[in-house]
Length: 418
Image (cartoon, rainbow, N blue to C red; front, side):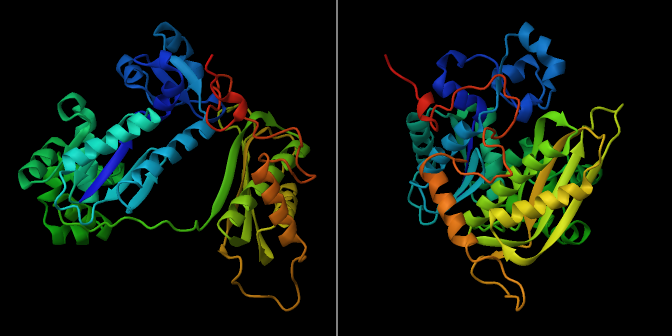
């Protein structure tokens, strides 16, 4: 059996843990630079605030309906997510972290367990230890556990937040209730094709001829159909090292001077290099991106990228930052107001296993230097040691005018009980 544990309105729930005054009130969380709505409480959904709403257009609407608008607090959300995932690992060793607020669990050897009761234990422990409300869907396959979770969430009072599909009757009833567009793994393109084939509910999809589904669509769609039929074809994904590492950010303001952009690119490249060392990898290629503000239609637009192939694979911040800065010099266009930039590292290989070059090699001092910098930044404070090409007084420059304290990750923001 598989379980999908999903945190309810995760970002809003994290804020409510430390500010109980937000309970039962409409809450909206904004994206980077306070751009648009990326998370809403149930109360905000009921009022009619849409997902993705640009806040500058919906500001008055939020004030009229007393919707509390908050800047995204990713250090807090990441820490709370980590706590939830560690609790889930206490219930089974087989856990796949699917996103920041949901995870799949596999129950091997739990045949004698009352899974409905076990799901309630999971839900209650997470709520008691973190204050985050969750819903739990349990079923014979991953796709069906998604369906079960949606039922638990939709009918919260009737299910108590836990629903188990443990019989053929429950499976058929659940699939006849689930609209085809809500099925996990069915995007807009596939949705149109399936509706044209007469599939309105998930159950209709399972009634299509399996061999036809495999030939007409793809093996992935066939596996999804088999999963919905109760035949496990999708196992838990093992945690793997990333095949590419990226840092892309929108600027707080538009920049038309190359010095500011070089500083940002250097910071992004350094951040990528730190991630690279963390997973003990090196990279062969550095890709630098530059974007103007696409919303300012009256201004000249410029979208460009540059790929640099390194002579040796490296994870040195010095080498990667230098290459990124040289690349951005060649693609920068004077007179353009840039709003976004990014650095992508790809062609990843293990740091201790790659083809050596007979004629070129990196300075051997880089490796111990990077280790020392990582240890200092880890022990004291992130970005305690920076490159000279970075602004020493600057971190991520994002507009966060409604940011709440980092209650669990910053000693100065810890709640004081008086």
